[in-house]
Image (cartoon, rainbow, N blue to C red):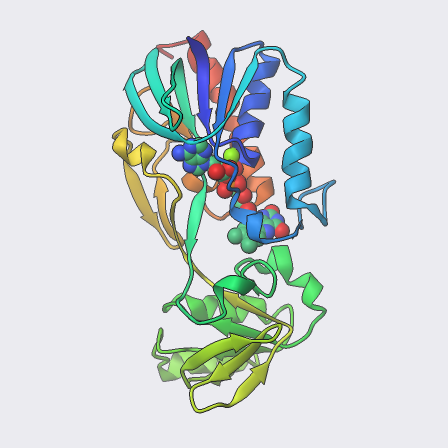
Length: 295
Ligand code: FAD
Ligand code: MG
């Protein structure tokens, strides 16, 4: 019987594990190894690790965790969570069953990208979501923002801080005169012709053949939990402006007693820094719940 099983051993899950291991608790991490940023080579904006490889940050964290004797780690996928507070059983895809008093979901999100030919292949290289993570490297070059819904006008506005923006509505949003006025106020060009495909580094080919070249493209995907485990375990979900996440309280507890959630899957907005902070907080809160079970 472990004190805590953490499903998802990326930034948030490992940050939680670190607090619990340093409290000499017995922690099992189960991780399928599919970090959300696996499509990008480098990670930016995480203090002390700016521009370091996304995998390298995760690997060096894991090496540090492995120095603690009360850690066990399963490289694999959790497939079910059963039981209740103080007596959970987590099954993994290899058929094994693991017991724990608490469960923490740090399972991250999946990005549902707009279906445009050539876009998915460029995700994390030339097509991005977060300007704080990837805007600087575009060197103030031309930026295309591909709409996915009405909120995309805000993305076009903010991204114009990083370079001249063309807002490609692509049939996802109708711009009324006030919306146009706001965009024009930020010198955003508006392109309403539908997109045929993405070509080259970040060249948008419009229906009819016109081509618009950019240093990079931004779009806002709809985010959904990358695993249905929390929902199957009875945890309430909630909708945010970015998609679907697990609902948690200030202590990062879900609607199911003994189950917590942290990182991208349980907060907005999303970044490595915020996932690590959320995980560290969740880890300490779970520890407190083991010390004061009724507190
Ligand atoms: P994730 O890192 O997504 O990790 C979730 C983990 O849980 C994965 O390892 C997954 O395999 C595992 N998992 C899921 N289900 C199961 C299961 N059933 N069993 C076992 N394991 C499971 N942020 C920045 O700060 N800087 C950047 O430069 C940056 N670049 C990005 C580039 C791209 C293309 C994308 C999409 C995102 C980027 N981000 C960046 C955001 C960053 O990736 C996330 O905020 C961060 O990864 C969230 O960490 P997390 O631990 O919550 O989830
Ligand atoms: Mg994690």
